[in-house]
Amino acid sequence: MDMEWKGIAGELISVLGLQSRPVAITFTNEEVDLSAGPRTWICRAMKLAARGKTFVIDAGTSACPGGSWHCGLTQPPAAAGRRALQHFLTRGEKLTHSIVSFQRMQGLSSPPPTGLSERIVFCPLDESPLCPDLVLFVCNAEQACRLIALDHFWDGRPPDVDLVGSLCHAAIGYPVMTGNTNVTFGDWTARRMQKYPEDAVFVTVPYERMHNLVKAIPECSAGNASVEIPEEFRVQLETD
Image (cartoon, rainbow, N blue to C red; front, side):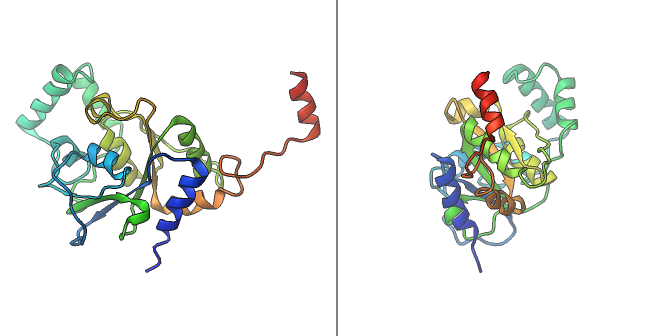
């Protein structure tokens, strides 16, 4: 099998100056011959996979109930569980004003990928034995800007992004359900608990979009194409 995604990783790291490795995220029902890693939070697996570790997470090894249902490994909470979640988000975490704003925030976004797969693999892109469904970049704002420019270079269609909600929803659930490239800052709880860098931005690209993104690198100034300024523009810029 041609594992072309392994070469993609090195090219993007070099061109963008990434400090963290792109992460392959793969939903699968197959048994995976990989070291599964410890029971962990999905938002932590994202961080550590960008540093070189591998995680195979299923309903039993996901340490966060919210991450489990946001990523489709378990059913969303209902009845008493839903009431407890409403109370926690509004009175515990205090991330949303009321149960109405919480409902609205969820209703205006995509549903979770409930029942999509038995497990999710998080692995550095250049080491993944599986074709990714998503490629996650933990990067800074400048690198995120360049990734988005490369992503829509050919068709000019800006991504339909979803910034709010949990980090695992915005970085995993939303792009896998919509096929949209997404940019998010994550939620404050995940950032604080996992000690993400202050300048961390999360960009997730569905793998089917990666080929055109990479093809744009030599053509786009957000990649490594040289900027050429016509003489009349140069004169105007110097005047201003």
